[in-house]
Structures are given as C-alpha cells and as structure tokens.
Amino acid sequence: NLVDTPDGLKLGGEKREVTVLMADLRGFTSLSERLPAESIVDMVNIYLGVMTEVIQRYMGTINEFIGDAILAFFGAPVQRDDDAMRAVRCAVEMQLAMRQVNLRYEEAGYPRVKMGIGINTGFAIVGNIGSSIRSKYGVVGMLVNITSRIESYTVGGQILISETTRNACREQLRIDDEIRVLPKGVSHEMTIFDVGGVYGDQPLLLAEKSSEPLVTIAPLP
Amino acid sequence: NLVDTPDGLKLGGEKREVTVLMADLRGFTSLSERLPAESIVDMVNIYLGVMTEVIQRYMGTINEFIGDAILAFFGAPVQRDDDAMRAVRCAVEMQLAMRQVNLRYEEAGYPRVKMGIGINTGFAIVGNIGSSIRSKYGVVGMLVNITSRIESYTVGGQILISETTRNACREQLRIDDEIRVLPKGVSHEMTIFDVGGVYGDQPLLLAEKSSEPLVTIAPLP
Image (cartoon, rainbow over all chains, first blue to last red; front, side, top):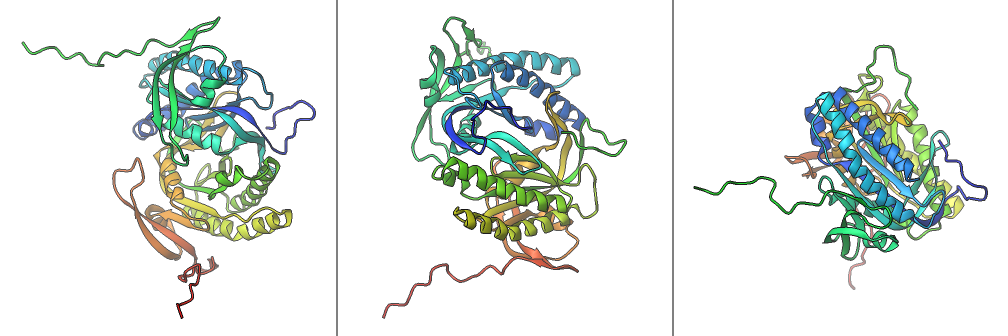
C-alpha cells in the first residue's frame, strides 16, 4: 500500500508544504439511518469511484476514505508549483462531477445528495504511517484538523478554502463569499473563502449561486 | 484489501449490530507541531504497531488509521456473543499496553503520551466501501459519529463506553465514573461510563484512579 517515491525521498516522515482537501456528502450520515444498507454502500461507492477518478486526474494523493469522507492532499510525494491551484481546480471538477453522481443515483432510485469541500495549505508531516502490517503514505498534523473544521462549515455544493490556499493560487479565483470563522483548536479568527470557480486560461466555473430564495412565495391577492 | 468472509455474507452492505472502538493519543496533534517530523511518524508507528497487535488478539477488525486515530469494530465480518465484552477487554489491554509504548518512547527520547478510547454498541452499516481501485471492509453510520464524540470526551488514560455497550457486557465492569453528555447530532442526553477494568473469571484492571489532587499544596504555616 506504500506509494512509490523517487529515490532520496525520506519515507520516515518529513515536514513539507502541502494542500489538503477534505470532502464529504453533507447530511449523509442521517440519510444512512433511513435507507437500506445495500443502497447506502452502493451510494458511497458510486460517489467515491467518481471522485477518485477526478482526484487522480489532478495528481492528488488519496490518503483515506472514512465512510463518505475523503482525505486527499497535493504536494507529496511530489511537490509541484501548482499544488494549491490543482487542488482548487480539482474541487471545482469534483462539484461538477456531482451531476454525474446524482444522475446515477436517480437511475437507481436513490435521493440526490450534495457534497462539501474544504481546502487548506500549509506545513504538515507526511510519511508512511501505520503498523508493519498496514502502512500507508499519509499526512498528519494540525493542518489536517483545521481542514476538517473548514470542511465542516460547508453547506452542500460549497468549496471553502483558507487564506493560505487562496494566496498560493496563481490563477484568479471566483470568490462568491468571505466568511470569518474561529475553528476549535485555532487561536485566532480565520478568513475562509467560498470558491465559485477558477478563471485563467482554462476557466472552470460552477453555476452562479442564486441570491433568489429557493421557494417563490406568491404575493397575497 | 478486502476481508475474506464466509460464504453467503453480503459484502454489498448490511445493517448489523457492532461495537465500535475509537482511540487516539490525546493532545498529539499539538505535540506534532513541536517535534521533528521523523520523531512524530516514528511515535505514531510504534503506537499503531502495538495497538494493532492487541486489537487483532481480541479479534477486532481494524477499519482505519487516521493519523494517530484508530477506528476498529467488533461483530463484523463475524458476529460473536461477546463482541462488546471483547471490545471492552481490548480497550483495557490497550491502555495497559501504553506502558510498553511509553517505554519505547523513553528509550528513543520522545515525550510520554496518553491515549483515550471511546466505545459504542448499536446498529451500523458494514460492507466493502470505496472505489473499484481501493475498497475496504468498513463501517458507516451515526453509530461511528457518536463513538467519535464519546472518544472526544476522554482525557488521557480513559476508556469511556456508552450505556448500550455496558448493557451488552456479560461480565461485571469496574465503573469509575458516570457522565451525562449531549453529543452533537444526538437528540437526547446520554450516560457514558468511565471503565476501570473487567472483573469476571479473568480480571483485567487498570490502576485505581487516584482521588488525590495531582499537586499537593502544603498548608500555610
């Protein structure tokens, strides 16, 4: 289960700059209490299959599936200039790929779902983590915990990124909103950004978020 | 990475009663910010190696390592009468095995650490979860989230179990404390129990928790 790495890379653990991406299906745990077990496992597997393909296309390293949650990172084992940028583009593609996931759900008679994604950039420890029997190339540190907190602020369909991720992006992002948060375990308020897409040479954009109410209420006669 | 299972077991996902055990090194993430990366990965690997051996001895299924966190369950793929009991005995052995972990840390010049364990029993969905490329026999559902919450209430050295786990245990437990909590995502208060050991034919006990203050303050002259 180890990742092949170029010669000279220390697998024993090293601190390096990575961009961590966490995603999950919002509200899926409650849903899992109401649907048949077979449907739930099928839903998770369809979703993870589609997202794995997208993450691999953007050269992300998948660390972990935890139920319907995905933990991936960019920048290890191989560091590239555009790690943060690829992570953000990957997230936009993942949100776009939810259309495909929900189409397959519809065919199978499952309910529609929405995904939230949190992204954070900074230093973390990467290396082969585990016991002699099961070891895996993974990431450890406060950066991961904070990414998880950022992701927990998402509502379905959202991509929230930290300021460090935003600053590490070379291309212009479409920022739909800016939120001040104080995650548990963090000593100061952070600004996180709701990303609607990436401009640049190859624009990749989500549908504009509507400011209209979801339900139109007819005026009283 | 699939688990071999007896004929007829549905791998597509089924709802069944399991006992979930979650453990982590309390305060380890903050520690990981202060120590060299090599030391942190070495510490995690020593700890996971020792705990894997204990969990396997008690026939637990390890689902996941997430950094220094362990997610294991008892009761799938094979259900046994004493699933909850084995989980609790396993937890006591794990706490006892921390002595061995800390001895190895001391030899290597690492700081001592303490582990917290949360245990919960109930229905969850088990099956092979993942994409076609990476699939794993795992557990999904609210039960896992609540176990994670229970574990988050622990201080180092503690084992906290839910009432359902306590009720599923055939042998008498040493209960050192009883705590009322309202975990996020749960509609009602729960009682959780601080387990100090198991009596029965083969007693397995942690050191008595001292009611003495940690620091003795000399009376004023």
